[in-house]
Length: 538
Image (cartoon, rainbow, N blue to C red; front, side, top):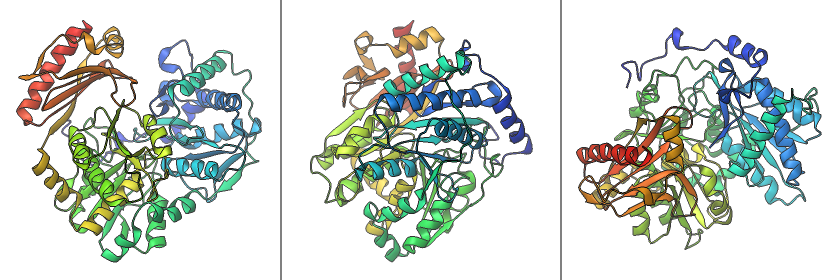
């Protein structure tokens, strides 16, 4: 943790917007260099133009690959496209439009030339496809999510409305790299003139009454503060306030591609992560002015919840509270609808789920795994430990199949309005009943070869029988919910667990760990986890 964490950004911390955009057009990638290839992670292709990792050639080739992919899949409906305020998002958005229009794709852009949050785009895709027009729509979100201002990002959402699966992204990335290697022969581009418009904001905001008890929020009179953190939700919060006549203040409506108004994250980087206390330091200064105070990242797929009595909530804590509340207050949901969580999320969720009499659906990291369950209602809630979640409507039908930070922020207000208790107060009650776990994530150094070995590690290769003084009850490399590979290993005991996964961008692996026996026991779990993993991948 840097000494400057949580302090205001200085002029020296800010990006050179003009230089960043110039590099987007001027630098040409060499796909023989791994760092300059198109690579889709769990949320699309990301990188900086300054590192020749996110440039015009990347986006034109990737868009052409998406055009070819959707044609191969028989997707003939419109393509919805939106963008966030990152400096590279505008140029990438223009490049994508030039390719889409040249290929004759019917493109729908925002009616008011506004930013489009990821959940709003997912909502638009699903709304179109639910209306059964005889064809299917898909979409692109130009965003690197919470990444620093120097980064750009490009995500593809197929007709199911959520993040594309690895089969789709692998095909798209491989084809894009082929096109770049071939000098972009086959990439069509023209002036982006023939586009249609769509009211992303209006359609999303007007539909919120079908998933959130907006009347309860309004009649309660609770005072809400919403900070978009300079992101794509900036125009949405005022619209929500006006449409539902709730007492809501947009705490900071500023938008600036340098994000000069932000406080620095733990590593002195400007990063729009609403789950980070360092990032949210300036928002936390207002915590006593509101009954509920929230933040969203740049594309509004993440949420941060602040209460006067508890400050910034740990994302795992709010997920547990949300699950406890929703499954007790949504009579229209299927009685056998499961609770979805990623396997690095808190075991508190397991205990709450068991108490509710619901099944737990535990999947690998990545929101894409929740998509099928959210669509058919068999999973009514899906959440990630990184402050991303979504759930179904009052009637049990799908809302979004991508993370929705606006929705979860509004849920915090509904919980207070209906129960009279803040989410922090409710979590304290859950902790008193189920125990109070200590949770943390740390990084451990690893060579590329060791990272590759960890990604392929089988649970049966773990030879240890004890972890931090407790018998190991499970060691597995596939998720219990769907049998998908987790790209690492998870080890459990009665009161603790750890999971280890290689980083996709650094020479480290991540150790997620939790203990219901306190901080000292958690530290012991972390130490022994590293020893166990290092022995397995040596």
